[in-house]
Length: 296
Image 1 (cartoon, one colour):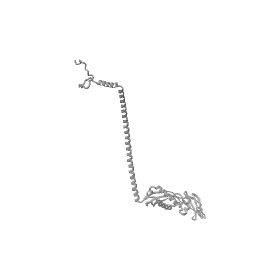
Image 2 (cartoon, rainbow, N blue to C red):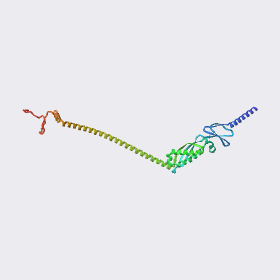
Image 3 (cartoon, rainbow, N blue to C red):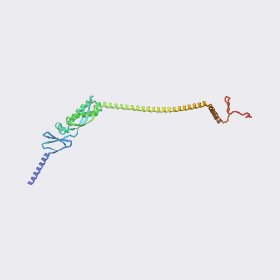
């Protein structure tokens, strides 16, 4: 029995010792993307970076997140400069500035979660920015609106020690009547553009037809000019030939007689030897001299 009692006593002492040792163990760790806030009695005594650290039993270590966080703002409401009510949903990504951890821990959050502050600031900024734009500009200048909201929100959240990474907007929505008016306007604009495109097509086709007609007319004119030029050259050549012949005849009368003889010879070559059945006295009959005594 004494042996068993000693064993039990030893085991209890060892267990208590291990418990006290674990409770008093001074080594702690700060995860990546976090900061360790060391407090004593609620007062901040230091900000530790990632890694291992020694923490005394009378100190408290709080893990403070400085990684990027996302805050969703659903159906934020505003009013445009032309008094059109508008809603939008946004997602704001932000993180706590590392040099502002102590201030944020002391004033706003012990773990780096500022979603409620970000959501409230985003709604206020959205109202202020949308009041500068008309309803059509909110749609047509969305990138400018997003840039203005991001810039204004950065200034707003800087007060809370947070930095804005980016802001995503998910669809502007207006009143049903205004959305119907926008849809009708878009339809009319599409019809107008369609009519303009059709008119441009017709005008282009007409221009093509005119160009083809002008080309054909130019070709015909060129062809006519060429034929006229050929006729003119031929007539000129013929006139020049006549001039040469007339000059030759004027210089030598025998040429004309020679031509007459050539014509008469050609006629004689073609004669078949038959005499005409009718003879008129108005013209001489060639080769019709009958020798005397032929009828005897």
